[in-house]
Image 1 (cartoon, rainbow, N blue to C red):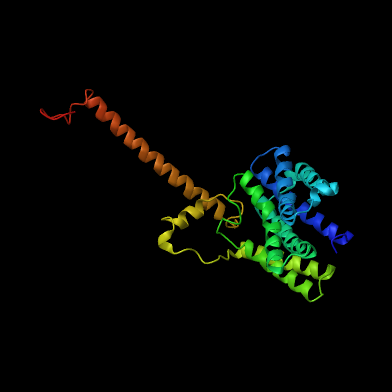
Image 2 (cartoon, rainbow, N blue to C red):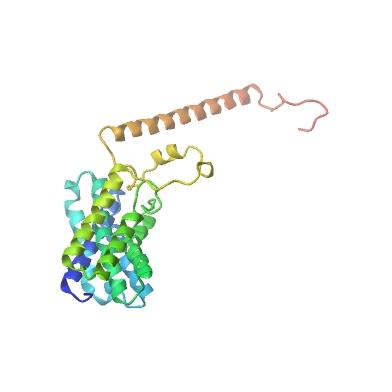
Length: 276
């Protein structure tokens, strides 16, 4: 199964989708094509390299040079077609979800091929799926989707890995099963992002005060999906808060200036017999 051309093409599709998400994130943050290529390489190849290093084998990205083609093609596509792309946030999440579905299934299958126990194979499948995106987001100074707390990310990957292990154990694993499981993980992730499904939060007394306000002000690409009118409203609220803060600071500064003009020697609070 590992050497099958079909497996190779599925794996390359996952690399390409993740590389697209990295290049689109670079374009969204106004990073040039070189930086976009770096983010695409990290997103597309990072998870697989981590998995293969843990398995103790030569990473496929190094033993098979064809794996380097997909990130280059993704960078060129985003560079040439970037001006025609709208709603970049949705595309980034969609391509990331597609790569997530492909990598969690084939990462688990590859680990099982190397004789890993089921629990270890599940872990390696999840690492394959989320590792590249984690590296991409950290380098791009984004809150990683794994830690954003705004929606489900690891759970869809773990679900896909578990279903893949079940398919391998029941001898139903094949091209059709791989396609269906990858699509299920993709759909699970997209619905969770769009509906903002969350895992249980910590005890509220342990969290930062006004956590909801802080989450609304986060600019992470994996945060709440933009809807009609929400972007402008949130921007107006943020600008209003910033304006009120600036007005308050300006009033404080003017008050201090008036006090300094009225009492240039700083003697207003001076009392005889007290140290200044």
